[in-house]
Length: 79
Figure (cartoon, rainbow, N blue to C red):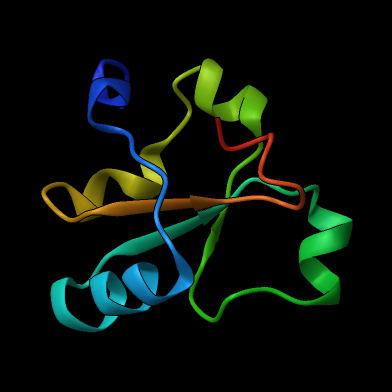
């Protein structure tokens, strides 16, 4: 997961929908678990920023090669 940030770009909702539907993109929700329980994108993985920094992303290993869409509450967590 580290080293992939050079390929990061901001996308629209329409682009995200297209990536999910056409390329099997994986959605990673960075919000706190309490917020995710209140509502989230179906099938999204919930990882906290600290887990990503610690490279604790085993849940994503099975999705290597697929686009990853990172979402958060304000957008600032995702950058």
